[in-house]
Length: 324
Length: 280
Image 1 (cartoon, rainbow over the protein chains, first blue to last red):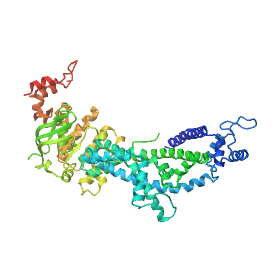
Image 2 (cartoon, each protein chain N blue to C red; image 1 turned 135 degrees about the vertical axis):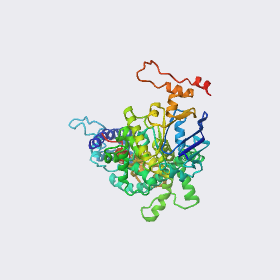
Image 3 (cartoon, rainbow over the protein chains, first blue to last red; image 1 turned 30 degrees about the vertical axis):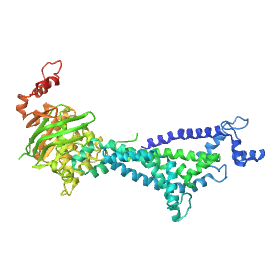
Image 4 (cartoon, each protein chain N blue to C red; image 1 turned 90 degrees about the horizontal axis):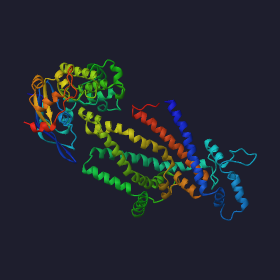
C-alpha cells in the first residue's frame, strides 16, 4: 500500500515537469519577454524602463540554457521558474506586482462558494434522477428523460448564462445578473444564479452517464439474487445496485473534487465573480506569466492528487481492489 | 394437495426478431419434500420455467401469456408486489448457476446472509449465531472466517455453499436450484449435490433441480421432467424415464451421455430436423 502510493507520487514528477515545460514553451512561442514588458508598461515606455522591468523580474535571462561564460547553464528563465515552483514560491504578479499567493487566497473563496454548492446539488440531483430512470427503464418516462438529457447537453453553456440572466435577472428581477460582494446574505443572492446555471449545464450529461452505469448493473446476476431473496425494488436499487455502481461513479466524481477550488472559467467570467477562474483568464489577457504558470502548476498538482484520491476511494468501495 | 402446481404456463420473450415462446403450455406439480429434476438442453425453457415460479423473469422483454402457478394453493399471478416479495426467499428460494456473480461482490458474506434473515425472520434475536448455524449446516468448517470474507476471497464451491446457506436461511418449502453445479468442477459438483440431498432430508423441503446433466438426475431426483423447445415432452419417475424413455428427444439426449468402458470415437449429436419430423 505504502509502496503503491510512493510509486504514484514518483510518477507525478515527470507529469508535472511535462506540463510546466509545455506551458512554458506555448507561452513564449506566442510572445517574447520583451513584448510582455511593453504590454505591461504601455506603448510609451522608454527602452531603459523595459530593460529594468525585465531585469527586476528575471526575464532578461535566456529561455532555457545559459551559455554566457561565467554563468551556470541552468541559470535560465525556465529552470529558475521551476526551482521557485518546487519550493512553492509562486512569485509576484507580472502585471500588478501583488504576491501571486495572496491573489490565489483571495480568489479561492468566491470560486468555492460557487463550485461546492453547485457540485453537491448537481451530484444529488443526477444520482436520484439517474437511479429513477434506471428503475423505470425502457418505459416512456425513461425515453422522455433521456431525450431531456440530450437536449440539456446539447445547449451550450453560453445559452444557459444568457437565458438565465435575461429571464431571472432582467425579466423577473429575482436575482442580480452580475457581480459579487463578500458579505453576508447579499453574497448568497449573487451566487444563486451562477450556481443554478452551473448545475443545469452539467445535469444532462451526468444523468445520462450515471443512468448508463446503473443500467449496466441492473442486469447483473446479483440483482436477480437480491430479488429472489425478497428484497424490495428500492432496496435492490439503493443498496445493491448503488454500491456496485459507485465503483464506476467514483472515478468521475472524486477526480473532479480538487478542481472545485480552481473555479469555472466561463461562469466566473460572465457573472463577474472574482474567483480563480477569472484570475486565470485575466492572466492570459494581460500576459501575466507568473499567475498563469502558478495556476497551471496548482491545477496539475490538484489533478494528480484527485487521481490518487480516486484510487483510495476505489479500494474503500470495492473489496476486490488491492494495491500492489 | 401438491406444494407447487403449475398449470398451462406460457412465457413469451419479445425480441427485435419476433416473439419466442420460451415456455409453452407447461404443466407439472411438486409434492412437499419431493425432488423433481427438470432436464433439457440450453434454450429448452427450463431456466425460464424455474424463474417464473417466483415471477423473477424480467418483464419486459418477457411476458406471461397465461396459465396458473399455485403455490400452497395460492395463485402467484393474483398476488400483489408486497405479497410476492414476502414469499420470495421465505417460501421459495433460489440457488443459481454462477455463484461468483450471483453473490453481490461488494458485500461481506455475513451481510448477505443477514439480509435474507432480516427480510423475513423478525423472530431471530441473535443474527450472528444464526449465520454461524447456517454456515455450519452447509458444511463450512471455519464459519467465523468465511462470515467476514468477501465472495471473491472464497473458492467456487465455498461460494455455492454460501448461496445455499442464504437460500435456506428462512427454511423455505421449495428450493429451486438452477444448474447449481454447472460452474463447478466435478469433485465439488458431487459434494454440492450430496449437500442438497442432505439438506432436503434435514429441512424437509422440496427441491426443483434444473440441469442438463442426466448423471445428476439419477443420483438425486424422485421424478424427472424432460423439456424440449419450451414444452415438457416426457415426465415420470427417474427409473421409468432413464430405463424406458418414450420420447425420441429423451432417447437422443440419453444417447449423448458417454459411457465408461465403451470405445466410442464420436458422441452422437441430436438431429433437430429429424426430431421435428418425428414429433408425436
